[in-house]
Amino acid sequence: MRPSPLPTPDVDARDASRALAERIAAEIRAHGGWISFARYMELALYDPQFGYYASGAGQLGRGGDFVTAPELSPLFGRTLARGIAALLQPGEGILEFGGGSGALAAQICGELEALGAGTPPYHLLETSHGLRARQRERLGDRVQWLERIPERFRGVMLANEVVDAMPVNALAWTADGIMERGACINEGRLAWCERPAAGEPLDAARALEIAIPDSGRYESELSLAGPAWIRALAASLERGVILVLDYGFPRREFYHPQRSMGTLMCHYRHRAHGEPFFYPGLQDITAHVDFSALARAAEESGLEILGYSDQAQFLVNCGITDLLEACDPSEVSRYAPLAASAQMLLSPAEMGELFKVLALGRGVDAPLRGFDHGDRSHTL
Image (tube, rainbow, N blue to C red; front, top):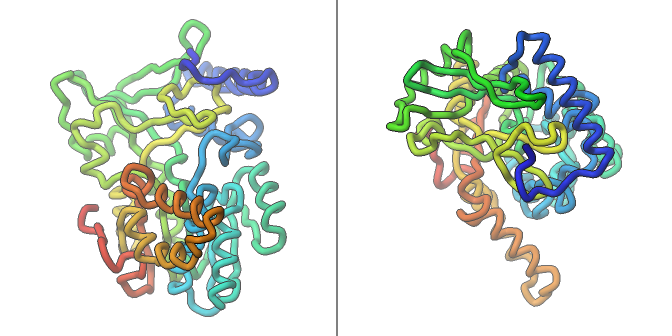
């Protein structure tokens, strides 16, 4: 059912969504009438022909479905560049995952040049052909595109709002045991169905030791892809830092008793709702990040936790206020929107508290500039 009052897509978009829904339904039938939510999310977002990120044409920005920090303010990438500049050794580069519109790469490269740091090799790993074309148009030959994680890398790996879009397993802890929630066909439509959890999802869910509330049911998500991705990065990183910026919590907050309905959220034309089966392929599907799971995978892979804080503290430590103060307040037409966007990046009511920054690394001395004050690594 379409959540109300969301806008109705145009005819071409509806046709594409219908084709993807039929493809998903065929897979469900081929697997006995059920697939995990992680698999559904993978198909809905990353199907090479109809998945949400396949075209990359109109999701980002004020005219799309959501706005990320680099589209919100140039201060974000410029401030991040100042933190990155202190981490790079001669000959090292930057590897950004999921570069979106290319705004973050442009901001970082521009600020590094302004700082006199030159332009280190900048690589983008982007799975969406549509977004890659958009990035090429914006960045030209300033960056190089990669198809996969390199075997060896030295420098800074950067992931801004990447992990939240990785497929997650949906689980329910009940009086009858741990159930895995997935997708089935009900009356000709994609719908939620659940069955007893098994295999790796069950083992990981048991380790969380969730207490069932009085209602007799607790729903949440489990990311197996995020930790696996961190392990892959650890295998590649010879020396340097992995910076993960995203919305989420440490484990004890992620699986808090009061968060009994999980964190799944869908974004469609700047409206957030909780129905993942609404027009598959036309909306973003996300889940908050369990930063403790990423940190644990990093440590098990031989990386160090170099810092963890909220976005506001990290940006202040890296000098966002200095950049804002360098803009003349008397130039109202320039200063006012810049100050307003800085407020959104820093305010606890906006992105400042919900968004976190996790730094992982090898061969790098702590503390890093972004975590001089307010480091919360002990909460992981």
